[in-house]
Image (cartoon, rainbow over all chains, first blue to last red; front, side):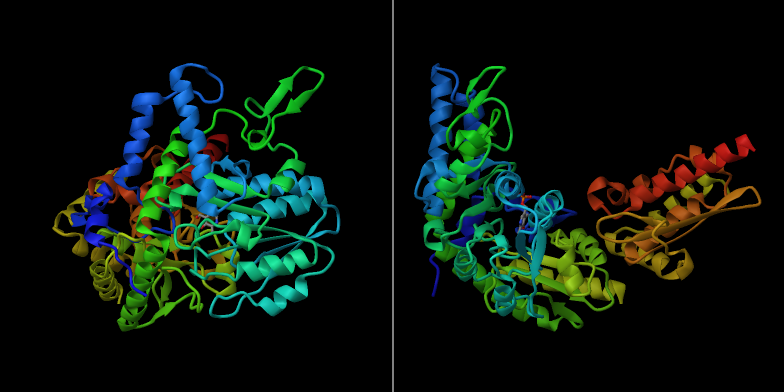
Length: 408
Length: 142
Ligand SMILES: Cc1ncc(COP(=O)(O)O)c(C=O)c1O
């Protein structure tokens, strides 16, 4: 497979890549934490505030109508992005974490009872652990964890053993932020459904690399953050099957989510507004559409092909660093390279690379149980996006040689 | 030496370095030379919670002076910690409580005290001063 991307021209779309950090041109390899934003998205944000900032769904004046239609257009755009059957299945949230909390709180509290079981995996982000722990504590449910092998792949046999008629919910990550592993979620979903459990997929990391078709996957919920797909911070979406969302109680109370309020009783608005209390993050929702347009114009398969080339190049290149061990060697991976170096603390690596203008993420990546599984306290992680280059990876390798020299 | 004399001495040490590498090599060397904290003091109570590297701080009074020992599992933080200990340890609780720690800023290491570093260094400095306040209060009450 080959891509037809003009990387030099793509780089020009991202003004921040011209930043100089500690006297060097920025090398940004922290894309799994958040991606940079193309000019198109920045212009959309400014354009919204400059030309049609207004509160939505409420006013009847021109600006309010314009803002409302841009807002709802983004919902349609996200519907298409995930191939959801209905636009009201797209609920705007603050991000992946918020969407997971919505489901754990609303669906979980209504439908889960004492003794019911919830399954997550060893490689979950804290965002997909803590909401379920909170629910289990409140309801007396039991949290079960799918183990992984040394390569960082889920043990599917063990998963099957955990599934019983007591399993009511399965919540797993599509792509691991710390390892890069792509999980076989279609199979996970089908197996959970076979015992009558509902499934949420944490799509925070997958959505910028992999095409997502929620109808084909048949997941019940899919949560993601736009800031990891070249879009703005502070917004994401929760996809949920319409019938389920309809059965679920609201999560927050306030404006927008109501039909009628009296002091005796409030009737709730319909989907999707039932779950969107208060003035939403209008500007960022509006700009999100442009991020998705950008991604689709490049084409996710092209992006994935190019990123996989970068990953293969980097995986080969780091072999020359003595004592470096890659954490996460799954067969199916996105462009995340997590590693440890014998005798060197990840934070020292991060500080010294930063001095050279190279941004990597160091630490436990909000996956402490996963770090414990590998008996480490953290890793250094380089994660690649479509605007990165092999020349930048060469700089990382030189940077690591320097780190080793200085700390040796 | 007073707290400020030690700080000024450190500042002039750093004036010798004209690039980041020699500066960090110096910090790494300080980290390597700094005596490790005895295991018995690496307790949960003495740990300064930081996101990335662990920092331990042990404080005790010795002849009216407040003394510190510390450690970290990351070498650069260890070097930075050793400077904070050098500057503050062995002074009266009152002096420590009142101290204005300015050398990090002056030598261009202030980013290590910033929130985002989450390395516990800022928390450690706060804790050292808190010990100063606590022992000062004790001696006033005694
Ligand atoms: C796998 C995974 N899940 C959840 C999250 C949380 O996303 P957000 O902080 O945007 O809510 C992240 C982000 O780091 C992630 O990588």
